[in-house]
Image (tube, rainbow, N blue to C red):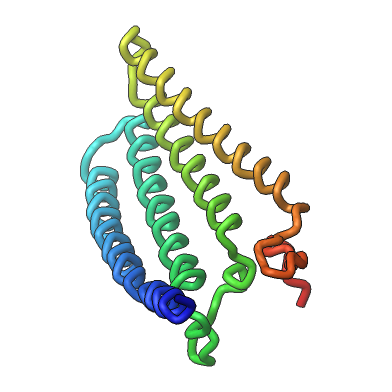
Length: 191
């Protein structure tokens, strides 16, 4: 039975390479966002040079570009941190690759918090864009209210994630057979 469990464990651990295909797909999405970003930038520059655009219209177009940039950054962080956490065990240590310093300190909690704050930022930009693009009709006020409620829900979720981590930070990890406490995975690296 132990041999079977060890084989299943090895198989499952080896299957982590399949996650690489998901991360490659995310890289393809980043290139798609880049194409859309460049196209929208070209259209905006063309309008600024040869056409007319109201101030609010310009702000909304710029917010759309900022929104695309933030979404691309979110996807990039997920792909890079995901590969670092779940797929590779040292391929970033090659001398020809410059590994970002923050990647040394990423764990699943930090990744969740980074994602939560990125989603809050994207939601905030979207809420501002929604507010600026509508007239103050009853229907638009309802839409802006719903967007604000959704944004507030994201903020509460991030606070909840942070609070839950703080509650569990001081609890020792005791799933090993001898029930000895493992070091805290959330401690910062001091080197």
